[in-house]
Length: 396
Image (cartoon, rainbow, N blue to C red; front, side, top):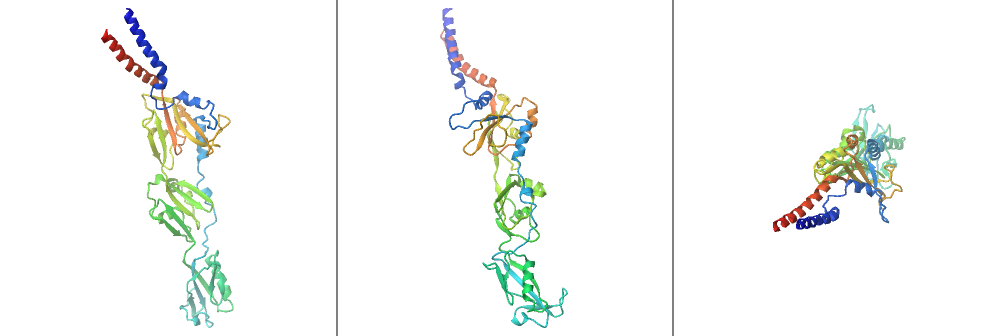
């Protein structure tokens, strides 16, 4: 009887020792629900950034969605005056001059000419096509019997009027036609993940964003993974290609000097903890909701997940929300470390999850349920105590 009592005390001692060391020794995939909540109230070390804990509700999801919503090309690049093709340095102009007999300035100069009676011109009127005129560094071209004519920054009609006025009193009933023979300025540059990078010339028709992509042979990656960026002067705007295709208003008219860049930047989030799978998961440039992210990560592991412990770790802009913990501490990059908490035991949370938008590089973490941690601990205890007890009984 005494021996059995001693054996029981010995086994109890082993169990007690395991119990004391159990919490720190049991393997775990990460902090539990209570440990994450305590992080917001813990006193941060000098220089460390405090963590904000925010419960995901429908109101929070809508507020974040409104703050992250992109303005779009229509509001930032659209609405400008229609494109007017203006000549620039290096452009080559073809100048045709019509004059009626008997005074023929250009016909006597031996230049190429043709007679016509069309378009209401006088019978026997003659058209002379001058050699191509390149706009020089001073922004001018030279026309015989007229001299230098300002062309840079002018439209074809404005140059025609200037030449015709210069010929008055020298040629009989002069009429002028100016055509852009070589376009060196009115173009859009298309680069990035397109079939062929190109410079697309602009015409008075007013080419648009999708015209530029078509001129470059289209994008080389799936449409839902592409972002289109437009650089106009000091403005840089970006929008998912899928949005550009679905919303015709975003297919804005281009301007001379615009740079259109097709970017293949697959967005992703990382799933960890008691989710169906632990890995980095890519998603579309159009964006996905938290509900979709949970589904793509395999949902919650039914055997160990804590439905009240679903968290999204994110570095958020300082002005995104009214933060619950004051004063607000930020990182060196001016971001606020935030943990968004979702309680899936509350049915209303499923609606909020369908509105809450995931951001690039988010970390989705599902904590283990307390009972799962206890079960792992008991498994360790029994895996040690049972062999010891068996050995003692065998020895007896």
